[in-house]
Length: 173
Image (tube, rainbow, N blue to C red; front, side):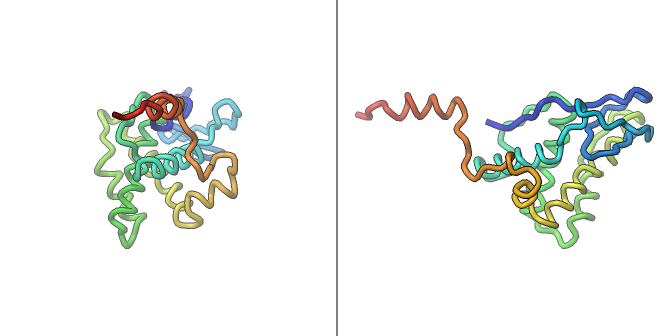
């Protein structure tokens, strides 16, 4: 099972760009309009993404789980983050920042000129996460700032509980 957050996509009232807020005092990545700090929309995208990444890493061995449904901009950005940090750990580039900038420019595909801002938006999110990764590491970051979002043991999902209760009690011939 993969971890999906609540939908956190925001649409700019001025230019109708779709994006995810990932820090305070955020400006629209397309038109630059200041997005007011509103508790209802100012979500903790980066801590939620890091929490999901750590869960996936423990459970599946990679930040990106084998199955990842993309139904929102939030999930799309999370998918890019999963891939970016799996690459960083597998390739171990000398200059991760430069490597990730080049990678984002190759993998983020836009359909028209209106979506050009998305390349920079994805890059900004990934590089913000890279700072955390390099400074303290993801687990230390969550332990210090969001202790309720890290757990050293993977909690059993409902499906895991069902399997454990029913399938493992069946006597084998």
